[in-house]
Image (cartoon, rainbow, N blue to C red; front, side, top):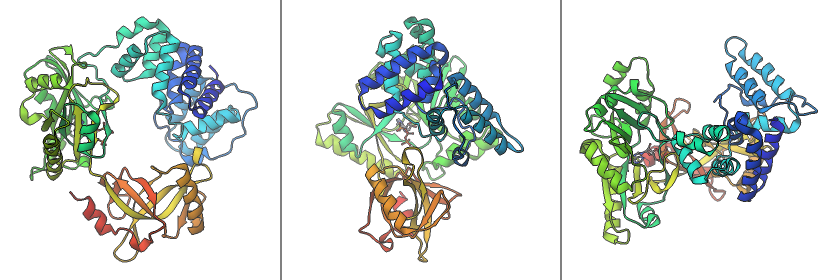
Amino acid sequence: MLLVRLADVSREVAATSARSRKTAALAELFAEAGPEDVALVIAYLAGRLPQGRIGVGRSLLREDVPPAAEPSLTVTGTDAALTALAAVAGAGAQNRRRAALAGLLGAATAGEQRFLVSLLAGEVRQGALDAVALDAVARASGAPADAVRRAVMLEGSLPRVAEALFADGPQALERFRLRVGSPVQPMLAHTAASVTEAVAALGTACVVEEKHDGIRVQVHRDGDEVRVCTRSLDDITARLPEVADGARGLPGDRFILDGEVIAVGPDGRPAPFQDIASRVGSRVDVAAARAALPVSPVYFDVLAAGGEEILDLPGRERHEHLARLVPEPLRVRRQVVEDPGDAGQVAAAEEFFAETLRRGHEGVLVKALDAPYVAGRRGRSWLKVKPVHTLDLVVVAVERGSGRRTGLLSNLHLAARAEDGGFVMLGKTFKGLTDEMLHWQTRRLGELAVEDDGWTVTVRPELVVEIAYDGLQRSSRYPAGVALRFARVLRHRPDKSAADADTIGRVLEATRR
Ligand SMILES: Nc1ncnc2c1ncn2[C@@H]1O[C@H](COP(=O)(O)OP(=O)(O)OP(=O)(O)O)[C@@H](O)[C@H]1O
């Protein structure tokens, strides 16, 4: 398939809001692509590169390369060129990358160049397209959408399922079953503003569980064989021997458990996420890493028990299986709300949330007890609740946008006031900015500009923005040694002056639990 066809459909789909038109355009494209090209076509449409990061920075992408007059690039040819580009390393790598990129872009028409540059800059990102792409795969292959959805949830990849479907027809779906030993993508949660809101939104018997801030793990045991996998399905068994040994000691020999790996400090409080992440990330001297920070799992769900898949059982019944397999200290602490209309039970759930925060955890999950486990999905039946922190911070610089935001001042550099009258940068964000806000801040920050290196515009520290964020994380990049986690802009505050912004002392204080 020619890349130009994909680039055209990508543009067409982005430009229409009608889901039926998107599905029809994609179904036609997938049918044309066939089993050879469909996996790549789906990946590119969603903005994903099979090569992962390929080492092409924004400066290279900004270089002008004269476009080709006629389209000739194929989807597979593009993939081969990107694989070669990703492999460039060693001395002079940057120049060789530049040449390889110029070769690829020089073979592309102007439209294809725009698509490739957005793809490489990570700006295609049409995550919302995944559900439409799934329907389109079902339509083009003649398989029922529900059966395709289930296969994708178990395989964790629409491209792989699509490839099998286009090669072998609807019966290929039988290959995609939950098996002990093959990891599946875990179920994820939506967000709710409070426990009361979460319980009301579920409107059914539910359970409030502690939310541990560790590393999500899926533990498969088949006899003495144990595999521990991450949320992205990487096998980390060798790095967590204590978790694997613990699973061998449980009373059951063919199961899949879902949980979080955490570490508890000497004070009984959970160790910071970054410590657990670096423990789980260290592969070299596992014994030393284990001695320095022993971890333990906290399990909250079970996907298979006694060798049987139990994904479709309601949460209440899965928990009975969990309770049989996993002793209490290794199970998540929880509080059941049998009747969402009972004010006393809701108040008890709120108190459980408050106590969970006092114990040093990051929040809770509220889960419907009648819901199945939907692997790989952000299910509406799991709602997470975390305390929201907000701050008023000062914009000290802003980066020029690219892609859809070309010509606009987008990524804000955010700082708190320092006690000495200066500013301490805490992070950057462009999240939460609507088009209207982007245009407004482009004008306002343009007026405040004092320096411009073509990419970052330094501004007089006068504009205050209200930011929501999930917490602080350690960072060697910023002067206070901490950075905002998941900062997003709530609103500009032109009514405030920099002197009204929060101080670094208040930031540290507000975030301490
Ligand atoms: N009791 C629990 N039940 C489910 N998930 C839990 C629980 N305790 C901790 N977690 C963690 O919380 C995550 C649920 O939130 P979500 O699905 O939104 O993941 P996320 O995008 O990684 O968000 P976050 O950064 O808030 O953890 C799970 O992926 C898991 O890692």
